[in-house]
Amino acid sequence: MNKHIGRIGFALECDPPSHQEIIDFIQGLPALGNVRQMCKKGSEFLARLPSNMVLEVTSEMSHAHPFFLPRVDEATAASLKIGMRQFVELVMRCRLTANHAKKTNILVACAPKSASTFIAAALGRALDLHNACLTCPTVDGQLSSLLGANLRSQELDELALLRNGLDPRSYVAQHHVRCTPYLANQLALYQIKPIVTIRNFFDSLVSLDDMFVADRRTYEHAQIRFFNDGLPAHYSDMALDDRLELLVDVHAVWYVQFLMSWQKCETFGAVKPLWVSYEHDFLGNKQLLAEKIADFIGFDGVSLERLADALDDKRDGAKYRLNKGVAGRGENVPEGIRRRALAIFKRYDQDGDLSPLIGI
Image 1: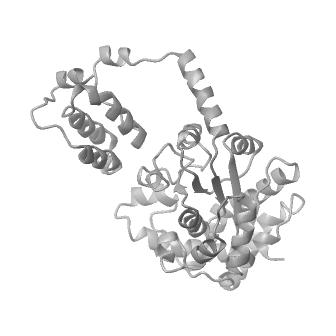
Image 2: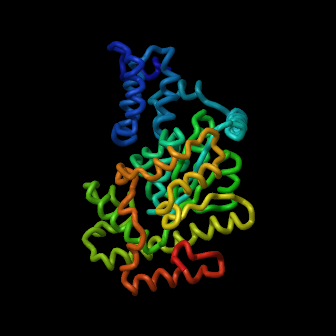
Image 3: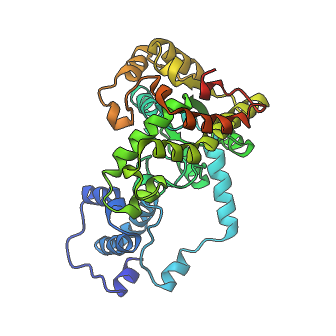
């Protein structure tokens, strides 16, 4: 494979990279610009390797970046081709391996601004869990944002489930995902325990606005901002009432569908989630919350003190999307905007318990 890369203009004219240089390059792939630039630089790097290392490192690079492919000729591509029979057998083996793995996998399925990022990070620190991404085939939960995936619906990705299922490390993933019978079967197959975080919608609304306004200061280009939140280019310049009204239009239906989907799937026995309320659990007694989580996941050797301390340690709160960390901020949402949201929620009042969203 190395000689074929050389044929398209790259020559092995320098010392091969060290083991650490290889690791650093692979980990830095997502920061190497657009896909075309990244593939070009990756192929140039591969040309520096001894021939007996090229296939292994190429595979690791493809694992690190979902869009990396080496620049090779048709003959090399043909020599690496696999057939459908190989593919279906490998998928079956991967699923079996993941299903029988003896490890703890947690999905924090969350309504936005329900302290989910903070809770997932606390679980990771206290239980030594890998931070996984289950919606994109990336090496961790941060790279999907870097690769421009934030505007996608956060459905669980089969390739991401397979690769994390094969990883021997226990993991925690945090995603804004509604439950469906299909997702419930995915959770069962890949042995994933769901923790569902929920918060009063009007408190979330105010916190969402804070987050979007702050985030938009970090993105210079309007095009990039759009693919992060889907909001208009002039969002930060709009009056507060107009921003909140827009957020109701964009998010209210999703919030109620999120709540109803998990309630309904639980009602007919498809899932057995642990419900974590922002107001009653996250802002409540952290020792009790730690005990609830430990009982739910059945993780051997859980230190309740360590878990409670992690849930209570807000020193790096901003890093984990924790804003004010209080309840009641939505009480000042203008009445017209409140009625607009409540009218949407009322359409679902025969479908489940709306009280976690509206506080009644």
